[in-house]
Length: 375
Image (cartoon, rainbow, N blue to C red; front, side, top):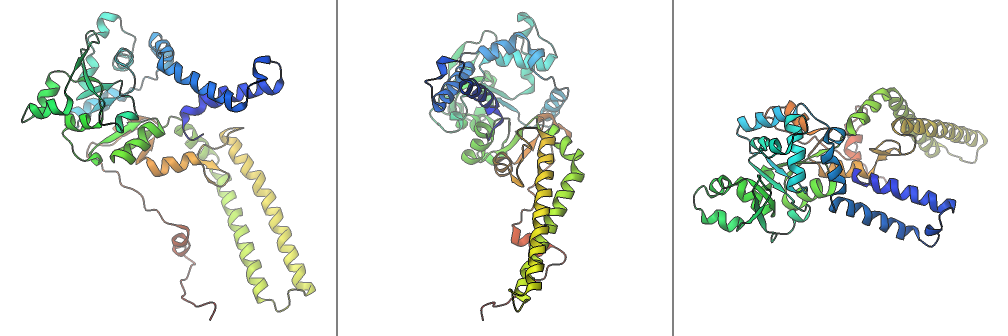
């Protein structure tokens, strides 16, 4: 798995495998594992398309939606500072209105109050039913204007209409209504009056349709939201002494291997008894270190999750999920409102990345010597 959205698929698929392997359900006897997974994928997609998930959330938003007290103050501060703020979502207008009204007021509203949609004051424009990631790929998707009062749609000519309005065309276009359905990134750029994707910071929680696609295709700056990060950091901090022990033992094992290598090259007779005894002892010590490290690594991963282990690690290396986060998210954090802890003038810059050979030379006891080993 390389995105958190696949947890649902993985859980359902694992449950079906267990039922099939137990042999208590005849309906699964003639299904291959591949067919079972395809059925799971189709059913999950159907639940998103037919609204059954979002209808339940809309009925009890306080049960499913986390109300973040920092959201409204952050967006209001952005608006006061002149930062253009937009909402881009695959959800349709009815659900978006319900969810945003709940976040704005902190409670479920009746129909009359909800139709006021006071939360719209937080955004320069709102786009629902965007069909991401197609929104970022297909320049021919049509843009419709929504009447927030009743949800009805009206055709627009998109970029052509904005251009036809002349000077300040984007402003005039948005004055006719700033809530839309569908469209594509060309409409968004025109309404925001921006030509360079790097001027946009897009905040999303789907690694592929939000982060990877927006950055790779459009050059947008991206901020990836992953709520699990807070728990990962808490567990990491609690087990930091263990991590340091693992690092020290791995370094000791490297030094032991290096010593053995130097010992072999410096020995005149590798078959000598004393030489073989030393090499055997080094090998035995390496085995003991490996066994110790294996036990400590299991303890480390189990601290995060007894089965899955640490989200960002696979053994001693970065997990595939960590690779995509590090390479495709310009920023990543546990909640969007963390951005509100920084001023609107704050610049975020990439950290220096070095490869292993540079890291080797950067250590205090390293010395660079140019030699011709085979001369």
